[in-house]
Length: 306
Image: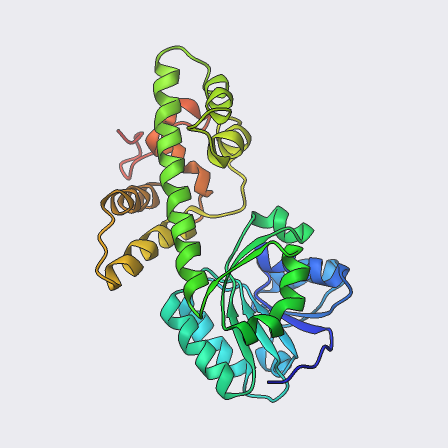
């Protein structure tokens, strides 16, 4: 496997996460080229001093590539194009993808003398912008060693090597469906508190110091829900997709997690009411509308949903 340490990296996908990761790598001294088909995404990256291109072939063969893509299907069409030109050392896929896809891409990369690492991340756009993401890594030991310089720049070493190719995707999906469940349960609990005349913010702060506390109660609800801002930067459409994928991945191996399946169903209902571009914290508007200034979403008939 190629072991060059040349610090040239292509970032494929310059959305909220990809653009922030490109900026972090640029500030860390990497020579970054960003690819995105959308003019606005490229313009934002260019303002941060990053060279950009609208043509994927321009970055094929770059020693390192970081993928931040919307779906596994896009990963499957992108990786072969990157490997079409010799020179790629490692592809680090931060996409919340599917384990079967990552296994196939790892096999393809290995056949071409490169490494492929599934490394879906957590930490949001703030973590991406500051190099403090956490990553769930699925890779062989050799592939991880090759990809490690990029992972260190993006996470500061805060990554977990879960196992072989695809395992990072599995644990990231489980993480997201657990967060999805917590967003529903905390919302419902704070709705009960509000109905008793208790300030939801006070209830959330108290719970966060006790056994029922979580990042959802301590940060997400106070910062994005109770404030009414709903500006986390992560869409409801993506979280609904991830929750459904987690249940699908379980079904593929004969597991039937009933609670997680029920949660995934609630997110699909919220998706139908709010649309994919809503912020994922707007799930609170469907499970506890009284605690968020935005209130209940309107139904398709134009009246607030029951």
